[in-house]
Amino acid sequence: MNKKQFLMILGFALVFEGAQCKENEVFVAHGSVAVLPCRDETSAHSHPTAVYWSRIVGNFLKTVWRREKSGLEFRPVRDPPRVNCPVPNFGKADYSLHIAETTIEDGGKYICEVEGKNRMLKVINLRVVRASFSPAVVVEGLRTEATCHVSSGTQSVRINWKRNGKLTRRKSFTSVSQKDGGDWTCQAAYNGEVVEATTSLQVKGIITPQDDSSVVYAALGSSVSLPCVFTDGLIPYTVMWNRTSTTSYSPLPLPASFHESAGPSASATIQRVEDGDEGMYTCSGMMKGLNGESKKVQRTMELVIARVLRSSSSSGNGPVTLSCHLSNSSHITSYEWLRVNYGPNDTQTVTSVQKTKSFRIKEVNEKDAGEWVCRYYGEQGVLGNVTYELHVMGAVKSENSSSGNKTAMVMGLGFLFLVIFLVLFQMYRNYRRKKMILLYPAMETIVHQAATEREKRERSRPKMAEDCARDPKPVCV
Image (cartoon, rainbow, N blue to C red; front, side, top):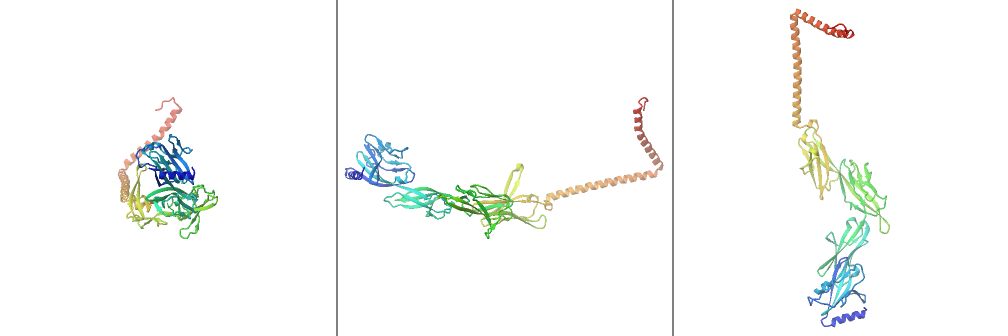
């Protein structure tokens, strides 16, 4: 249909008796379903003979959907079709047009023409809201621009941007960071109504950690992992690690047990944290841009070492103070001391003792020996733990152990005295026996002779047995 015919249709609709011609605007988000309203307000029930939906493209009318008097429907050839006018709604005087997966190109003016008891003509202006980034995929540190596009129309529109549910005025990014990645929402407000369209920004680079404010806590003597995870686009063999001082930022050598991984996950591990390993660690690598250029990205994180310091008096069982010490405690908000006890089957019981940086044991005994844990907290919660093994030496035994040692010593001394008494008693008996023998000399002679004869018989008995074995004829008695 050309321009002349189109103007004739509009003019005819305006002067025709009972004709109605109204125009309104419909706002929808890009990708959603648009419903262009076309209802006959003069009648709750209608029996139309024909329904025509057209779109104004330049100076021409382009048929979008139509239904003739014969019931024959015409629609664009598309699989599946995006445009539909539900016929079952016609009985309710509703001839609205439904457009699925709306695009920015669908915006513009549409004409609904209904031929029934009355001739009705309505003009609807479809305004599509689309949010986008240019470019939508960017390497961190580069520039991108956010755009909220709204199809042209008569009503004024106020544009706002939201990020994580909060309004923001930022739409230009001169140096993109990982925190800028994710979903952004364009909010188009008009005549008391609001339409929101969402788009996504993908940032390439180091996703873990997201910025240079990361702090890693590790106990002295433990192992620790320093995270450094890249997105896709990392140029192979370009990852490097270096270490600097926290105060002077002068370069320092990496620890002896430092080991780094290969690939996108370039995280490093310190197998055993030693005294002096604290400081700033930097991970860097080269990323490939959209146009083939390379861009260096890097992350700096701080390693903080935690340990337990012990101070005690000169006496063995005197007071002992355990203090939780960190190489940088600027992010610490509170401390807590825990007592760890182990039961049968390696069951573990953790008891909170005191919420201070230092813990004082007035008198150390055997029940204090074992595992003590200092837990430190930040604004986000628990940051880490450090364990200390408290040993109790000989002079620091408990009173029960001391009394047990005293009992054992008393029993040992008693046994020794008993042995000495028995030895002295036996010596006394021997002395009395000798004294009695000296009083009777004849008796001593008799006893001596009896002993001599007994000894001779004992010596001759083996000889007689040997003679009988050589000569079995005689009878030996």
